[in-house]
Length: 512
Image (cartoon, rainbow, N blue to C red; front, top):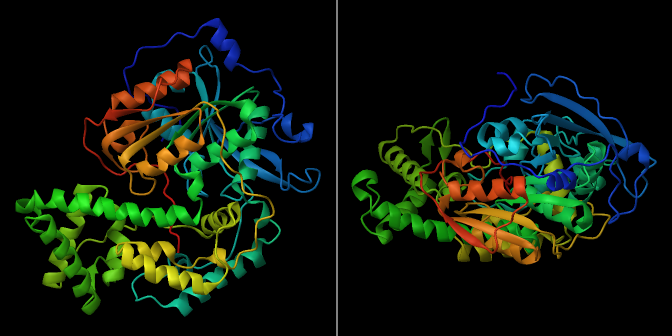
């Protein structure tokens, strides 16, 4: 398909004043941010050579720049950072907008095309849309571990086996250390934020303008902390609470899954004539629990898989925030369990991950914070306790990970506490980064404003067409901020006016 953008939306063109143009347009070589020690000019003043993109990257042009592997020794090894671009209208251009899809370790090279297709032309005409593969990921210098698909998937379809899980976690950590030991210590969120500042400089932007999703909200927050003077217009969508990073992020999902489940049981009960799951919330709850117990006795055939109760929980837990999706899935599971005939395959909510994505993911998650227990007994205790408290996901969210065996990070955790002006956008019923998480980021970023969409489901709020939430209110506020620099006066809620379906924002990968 052609890379050139196609616009949706009918918002009127917004006129930029000469003063705004001067504020957004940078000199040919912008200076590195004073918030961090200067990096050599060989990095900040390198020339970007834009070329045609590979066939699998939907953008106008692509390029590769160099960044230091170790910012404490920038004169040593250099690594690649891959960029992509859909150019702005030359007559309206005011700067660049960097894009991150989340993950962590998600590739962002095709993000410009996704945003250009869905966002208001007032944004894509004025900004060069810049995608990138973060350090360690994809077309940038990649992490490799040599993990197999079975190792990356784990095995949620059996009862908890602590010894097996501990062995797998250690095996993955050992493989990554053996294959990429020199690279791993430097694959962190803080270093990726430092890379963004080099990208800002080489693109000639005085300020970094940025749109990040999911984990990308944490990356954006870290940038504001390290480089407050060069933080421009920052939009953080589907927000991670920096106070919970990282283990607390997954454990928080377990708590929110129970809230979503309770809401779903009421919704499904009101539609018993359609789904036949029970005409009260209590009966719907019993239907689901009975299904898990039955599957433990006789696994339920779905596609090519046979799902035990644990397998069903792993497949459906994060669907409950999207009530129709959950009702469809549980109804199909119930039918397959009673008939013994295979139902349609259920998707893995977190999707498949490559060896590269898996290794880069754990490099970031394990090294950003120091709150991962090192004693396997701690995980065993937490799995038992949290499954009792949060039956849907408590055990899975607390299970041991390679972080228990990963080498400790070499730099201090970045504490988020600043007054940079930031716009946070959020769906109320997000299965991974819930509204409570966005409020946590809002508290940490004291200059931020939170706009959430009441009643909206799915991971990824902006542009609302991406998640089919049909929320012109949210889109308008983001456009006004990116184009005019106008933040809402205070935290506010928009009302969803359309149906929902899963968004394209990249998910957090499984914790185990």
